[in-house]
Length: 168
Image (cartoon, rainbow, N blue to C red; front, top):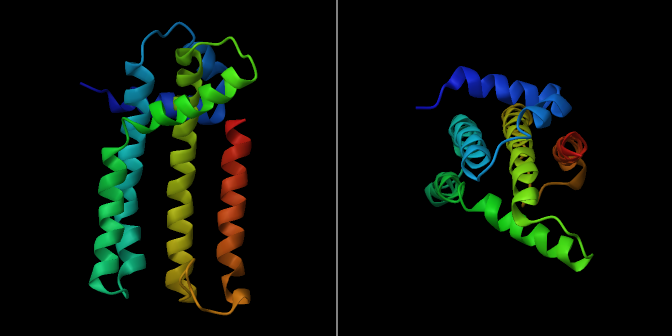
């Protein structure tokens, strides 16, 4: 059984004291703990995103709404594969530059770091949806004037840069 309070403290430590966090997981061995931590956080983030996705798609046709919900379900399905795929791609880059670290030594920090990205993704979803609900301009794929889309691109850019900086 997963103790949610422990996982929340772990997430808080990861976000606000990353050095202490990585020191606390330094002795961890195996793929299970990082993978389950990421999966738990990512699935919770995706579930929390559903009301905002539904809000965004409320004025869209039913096919578009279905695609939005299916994307969340598919995302949940890939939650266990994604860290391995992303680490594999990264590991190929490491090997190309003659890096000596093994797959696990890439997997663990990368999987924990992807957790940070998932939380920023929730913030991005909420912010963009609330902006859409307030301003009424759909983000991305819109035929609206580019000037009307600037706030959406700013939010995406700022949260993406913030997540990347936080992970580094």
